[in-house]
Length: 176
Image (cartoon, one colour):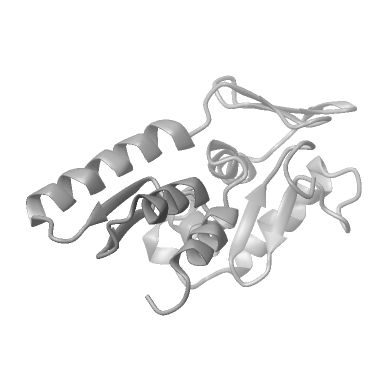
């Protein structure tokens, strides 16, 4: 793309754990090291075969899937979510969630710290037939914040990333 590739990698890596494979004509070691240090998962130099590129993309995707999903109990500070037991607890004790609220928080918790778009949440929670209907999601997020946030008007855990989606973060996350 146009622009500084290293800056693009850093910008993407700041909000997403998605795999990044750099394709470049630059073969200097300094360029490769800079891209990998900035957050790229792999660096492929021209010329390369389609088979090699596809194999590298598959490998990057496998690493990402294994490393991105959270399982078990998550301690976010004063909020704990146990994905196996399907329970949420706050400073005051157990938090009672509706099945829909639980599915939303579970989706966000499995990708802790990553931005999940409205479309992703709607697709995973309500199904693809509801894509484009974000009102139900916004109401669910508002209700969830009322249950899990110390101050729902200033969310600490369930934050909106303007124009992108939502992120579940812990007290020790950047900005948390």
